[in-house]
Image (cartoon, rainbow, N blue to C red):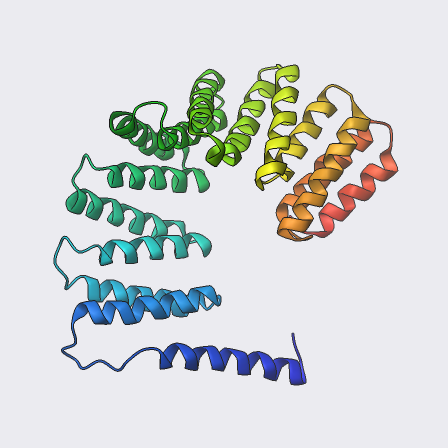
Length: 316
């Protein structure tokens, strides 16, 4: 815990932020227009969220939502408040509350935009991604399957938006162990990204990594290696995350007893995770564990134990 001047500076910075947020909001009369109240609360909420004052951000977003409820049904301010609250609750690890706001946003989108609108397909895709992030895989599959059908009807199978939902659905099937279905949807996504050009190369790198996992699980190590090498090149060129791809390639090499090549990839993954996420991130710990296991299998038990001890010190 900070002491003396450091603690005082921390309190002063927090007080300054609270004052700044309060100062930006005009004192409205009790009969102020709901749109003006919404704008005040939503702006303050965004400021609090950017500064990691999340409980204050929640309060202001909820007050913005209360103000939006007095606006006409076709007004989109309530929709924005629901989505902001959903994302905030995701960051807080409060999945039930996040789900409620995602579902409310979807219901409003259906009413405001029309059931066949692109916005409803977008909201369903967003809902499916949320469900997948909290391991509610059947719910994710349901939402994403509906989103994909809508996007195909709206844009055709080769549009990048269709590709995005195909990729999300492919990953859901991979996590379910349905490898043929996963391969089908991920290949469809890659074809859509290829048609879309350079703007989707980073997405293609991630999809190639997911397809490589499917091939590795199917015993197709050579295909997995080829995809991962290409995905890493794409990721390095586009700024997409390299760490997961390098670790997966290390796993492929470990399975083939190509331990020196595996070590190169695990070190590459550790460097990428530590630089992008910080040395205490769970992805670093996960990489240390598999790195240590590889070293032990390769005949270096002391070095492997050192890696696993370092991982254990980071917590469960």
